[in-house]
Length: 459
Image (cartoon, rainbow, N blue to C red; front, side):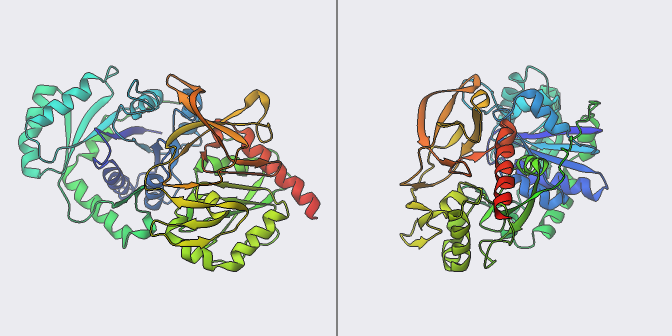
């Protein structure tokens, strides 16, 4: 890896993702072999990165994994010319306002990479300097090597740029004027998905073309030399055969961490994609089923109308096929899904209860999860980390685990705010939480082992 840098921002909604996507497309058009990463637990930004580069984007999160593991995940099989890390929220925003723990800044420090700070400068004059100065004053490692001014005109950028550079001694790499077209739309859980944006490829190409006219990408590359010589290579396990695991992947179920999938494959899973929306049944001759997160509420009527799929999933689970279901997949297993408009739609029906829109985020944020009876996880390695981010709640959330909010300053411990959660048995784990498997690799190992055991009984 020759270059690496982070695109961070002064706050959420400042244009990080739009500018990151434009830079990734510009680098691709120049012929660079680029990799992309996302700070934090977000699923959607990496989907845009993947759509542009054609290869998976990975999440890096210092709540989920410690600094050494996080660095290894960054360097793992990373033979890129350039690695671009997109930050999360504001540069110093992490688990709590009490510290920058699990923030973009802490990640940049752990990876030892420079930061390009995106500043939403719309409606500001000289006050832009005060905002930038405040961020520089908190940068004790001098990682911020320059700024990009978003949503101001080229003319005003030309006037304010020398003022910023002379008074603050920091490079202005340019600006990105406000666009009627070319920014990425949002919905209540974040950006719209790539497949929901008409002509996304053409829009990103146009975004990159405009961005290259006003932002000094060559200048960014000059300050982002990365001389880390370590290359972490995945050690493939000696697997003489594999189990077939059906994994739901379509518009309704699309939230998967790339390193979760990697660990499943390393443990011996052959992941076979299927669509609960469009297929009539799950794939044949499978040894396990995974139902990930996504937006089942947007497709509730169509999911409910696909009765043959509902029946096939229900029959397989009733016959004890190993299964994982989280958030959207967990909602799908309920008796019914009740939407904001009051309409209810029958679902798989394995979980006797209703998932209903609440109008607010429920149990939002990072969590530590421990089984009450240790099945997937051992007594000596009993916690797996995850997060919850949903507006729906169930009247039957399960009680086989204890979910707890982390202590600030000690991500391996929990305190005070805890609750019962999840359905866990020898062959399934279902719950609202999105799990991050690298935080406890015993989890995917156990699931795949269960799939092997199930296959022996099926045969």
